[in-house]
Amino acid sequence: MEKKKVLIVDDQNGIRVLLLEVFSSEGYNTFQAANGKIALEIVKRESPDLVLLDMKIPGMDGLEILKHIKAIDSSIKVIMMTAYGELDMIKEATDHGALMHFTKPFDIDEMRMEVNKQLQGGNSPGRFAVGS
Image (cartoon, rainbow, N blue to C red; front, side, top):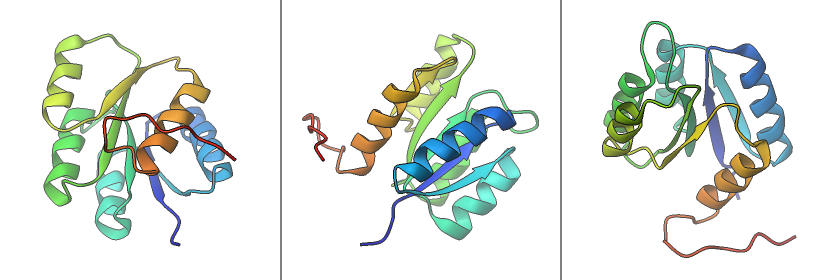
């Protein structure tokens, strides 16, 4: 079975490195981008299964990147990350197809569990137990 692909888009290097380590150790092929231009190139080239996308990125913001990702491939799952509680932006992101958001600083275990759930058939509303 081919490994699932996770793209991490954040302008903060420390967050990208942390998430890269976590999701690589979970067995995913991981990619990272510090800005929207690189993120969209990776989306076109690699077609990731899930994107962890920061809301606030210099140049092209998270909402703009989200719209482009969904235009390229509407089946790509997107989870937003934000350090700010902008409810209007979060609502707009959800309207454009984001599954959910995590507010920084987020609980890495919660995020890991949610990503695993989404990538292991989490499209149905039912919960799946993650066993070994």
